[in-house]
Amino acid sequence: MSRDNESSRQESHRQFAVDLFNLVWELMDQEVRTEDENIRMLHAAHASRFHWGEIGTPLELERGEWQVSRVYSILNHPQSAIYHAELCLDICKTNGIGDFDLAFAYEALSRAYAVAGDFKKCQEYLELGKQAGKQITDDENQEYFFRELQSVGE
Image (cartoon, rainbow, N blue to C red):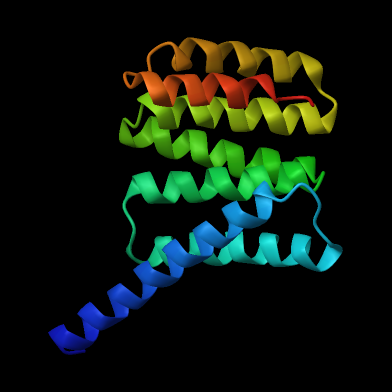
């Protein structure tokens, strides 16, 4: 494959990953979604993660896993939510990713266990999330994180 073709392929993956990630956010932010929109949101989250998997860094991979986990939590599929949240946390730990992203990996696990009805595990990850959240260096990101953490179990 020529250098130009490879560059074009990578740019296509990047554009699809970003566009699909943003679409998922739009759908997640809707107060009410149809079943078709829920299915679209799920497929878009997986598709975004796929495209990041082709060209992304560990940071994009873990954020993709976080988003897939959040979608499964929203859709009340706890086992899939837990699985993808564990992948997110593993990517963070393996690659030394901390701060905002590590805190949200714990948030994802806490939320997934809340959906599963395992409140002991939910509380365990909630506490880890709080500890990690206190380490977020950007004040605005820290405030956002704690607002999101408060919604676990709602």
